[in-house]
Length: 131
Image: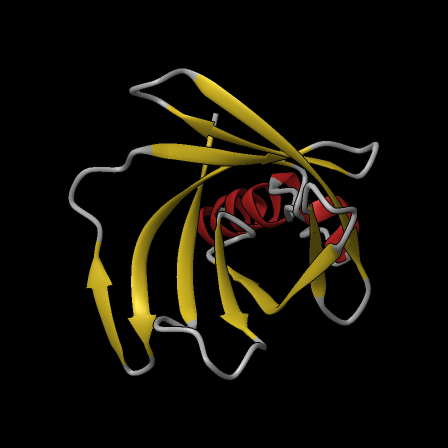
C-alpha cells in the first residue's frame, strides 16, 4: 500500500507539471523593453552600474530608445532576419543600417548583441528584459 501511494504521488507530480514552452521566433522574442547591462568586446564585458534608459521593440517594426533622465524617446525602424537591423536616418536622407548578430538566453530574458561594423569601439552589448 505504501508503495502504491508513493507511485501515485510521483505520478501526480510528474503529470501535473506543465513545461514552459520557450519562444524561438526572434521577431517575437525581441518584443518588449530591454536595458543594457554590459558593453565591451568579448570576453571582456564592462558592467553598466547606472542604466540610463531602455530600448523597446514594438510589433510594428518600431524601436524606441528612451533616456530616463531627459525623458526623451527616439524612434527607429528595425527588422529581424539572421541579424537585427535598426535604421537611422540622417538629415540629408541617408539611411544607416546598424547590423547586430543577436542571441537570447536565460529563458529569453537576456539578449546579446554583436555589432557587425568593423570600426566600432565596443562590439558586444548585453541586455536584460524589463517589465
